[in-house]
Amino acid sequence: DRLFVSGYLGRDAFKNHHAGIDFGNQTLTFRWNHVFSPRLFSNLTLINSNYDYGMDHSENAQGFVWTSNMKDYSVKLDFNFYPNANNSIGFGVQSIVHTIMPGQVRGMGDNTLYSDIKLDRSTSLEHAFYAENTQKISSRLNFRYGLRFSIFQNVGAANLHQYDENYELV
Image (cartoon, rainbow, N blue to C red):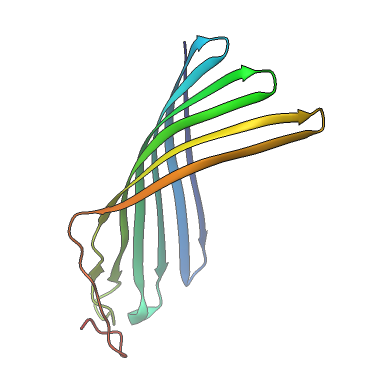
């Protein structure tokens, strides 16, 4: 049995005297590798990811700040089986919880042209079941084939926002 831990923190930003954009990601991964036999092993992986971005424009009454983020929590169980020297079979399952805050906008300054807007946070589930085989045909040719079944589900109530030709909420 082996346990692996990895993480990443990153942020990029561009700014001039009128506008700016920044975005970043933070991830943390735990993976447990277990060997059942010389021909079968598994990986159980837990993943947390948080991606966000922001934009701003600071030009008088047209100034605004926009923020958004997406968080994912994932669990994945993979198996690898080697029935013989010419075949490698992989199969497993994965589930992800997506939480998305698509945008929050607020005007800057006392004379802003913009009203504050906060789009509704949404949550969804994504699941997958998969299996594949890599078959060695010769020393120069492999044949890889498989199946994947995916499911995507929106969770909870949602609001539909419609705007008129003047971009006013209807």
